[in-house]
Amino acid sequence: MFVSWRIREKKREIYGGWIDANCAIAILDDRGVRTYQAGEFFPPGCFIEPVEDSIHGWVMRVSSFLLPEVQFAIEADGSLAEISSTPYPFSVSVKHRRINSVSTDGTRIPVDCYGELEQCSPTFVHVYGGFGKSNTSFFSSQIASRWLDQGFNIALIHTRGGAEYGTAWHEQARLQGRALVRYDVESAIHTLQDQKVCTPQQTFLHGMSHGALVVASTAMHSPSLASNYLCRVPIANTRNIHIDDLSHKWITEYGDSRVSDWEAFMKKEDPIAVSINGSLKDTAWFISAYVDDEVTPVSHADLLVEKLRANLAAVTYYRYSSPGTHQGAVSSQVRQEHSDQFWDYLTTQAGKTNKLLCEPALAGSHAR
Image 1 (tube, rainbow, N blue to C red):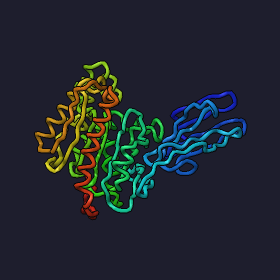
Image 2: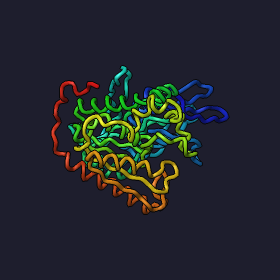
Image 3: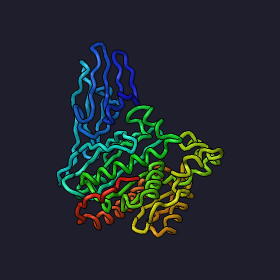
Image 4: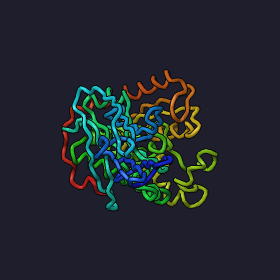
């Protein structure tokens, strides 16, 4: 088990983390160790986090794209007991399926899929791939009602760069390993398309912040991989990150552009600097950014949009001047309005592709 958090109590310890890219917990007391993981004890494809409860002490809160919340209390004997459940009333049959892709170097890349999964459908593919941050499922009423309940799918790719397989999983994707994340994404999407989860026209590749850098870089190298690319509060220009105090911290991930690092590896992964391998003419993009973003300056999004439009991509750009941060608008009402704009765009685009039939992959389409 790869541990990401720990709680120490007088008579026991509780560990949370990952077993084969599945969220899991382990309870250690004088009776021994009990291990519980998603797909076995917990619902498959879920996220587990500890919360304090005035009656039960520490409670494990479990959720996913398919489930708002289930709570489990720890019994005196160290076992878990379900104490509450909040299902979502889906009108379609949604499920979870784990598929595995193989990246270019032979590394197995798990992909969690959620939806009806009976035939090719518009599929929202979420990526991050950096800073030791794992890709996890969560519940959203908008995702549930405006996407999954329409018969569409979601896929989470557990690329390198996260912590699903411990520190080494992150370390492989730092610095000279940056390209591995893109290779993992490309291989995983080809697998989704080969297994008829979606077609290239029905693939919506999405990322936020660093994840948006991964999306944009992937698109520059393989424009035909998807029809729609979604980049929110993107990091897009790593050339001058040493200038700003906050982005200066990104050097541990991207290298130092004042020395040979940038030319050696980040120039090939930087969305603004890299050459486009093909044409962006048939791609559609959603870009959003906040002028007050304290983490990623809005200039990153501006430069990305400029490059996309110069290369004939269809771009929808929301450049928000309302007070906001890297996490969204300060006002909850305005944040909701911005979220609605995103889902309006997404469902409109999905509606254009929903009638497309699955087509067999072209011979050699996986070749690099």
